[in-house]
Length: 107
Image: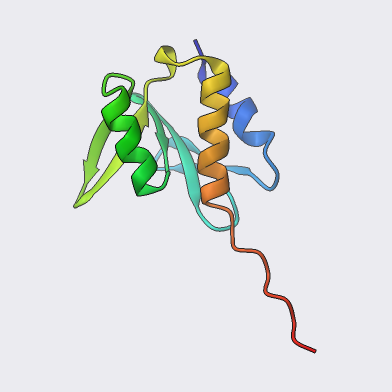
């Protein structure tokens, strides 16, 4: 079972990640945006829409659908996934939220 300390270690090991406060909760961000927030009800991950829908259907007890306005968000129940799977999900959210690579300059 992953703890908040495990989540923090996994997220901060990724390149360019910083920890910030998000309404009193620890959150992790790239330069572009927040991709993970440790909440009392689980771990919010900012993932692509199609990936979230897949997770909701695959294991609704583990990947809880949390509605914010018209958008569904995923709250992962860390106690229901292995540390390895959690690390992969955090990395996926991080990759999805990386800033786009700089455009090549024309000569």
